[in-house]
Length: 208
Image (cartoon, rainbow, N blue to C red; front, side, top):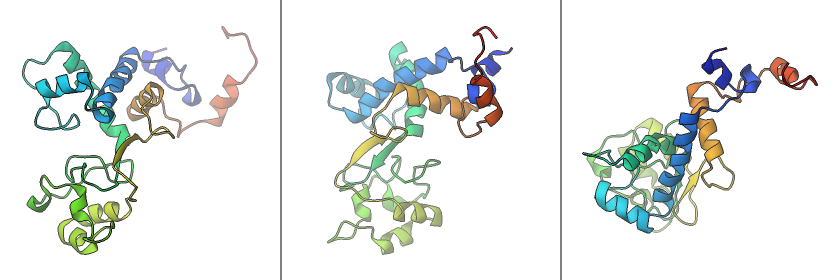
């Protein structure tokens, strides 16, 4: 049996073995998550000063002559982008462009290109006197897809970041690993086959 087959989830005919490289990336994602939720920690400030002084971790680049640790952490950044979302409060801490704040799992980033929103924060899209979307501004600037996503994005008490795959909003290595496997098509819970589920429930000796 090939490794790809062995790494598939049991519910779709595999053996459920873990891919160690993907598991390591999920572990590195834990440190990347700390850069986002705790930007004022000593480690975060050290890495920010060296690698992303003029931006945030999400928009950081690998840079020239990166250390082995930074190169490894950067490998996990795409995983963070896939699972991390901003919740909108006052909108003052979230850039309109380049931050994953739109509702929906597919693409949480603004796709409209306009100088009017460059380096602007989300609160620029609110009404002047009330914390609600300014329909006139949104419809004037954004394409139809972005308009729909913006109007469907709920407003909360304060800005914050959450991991969309956990009910408590906190990053977990397990859900991050499962996300990697789902994206690769080898660990999907959406295509579960009742035949395979029944097969794994058979009471038989382990070696069989």
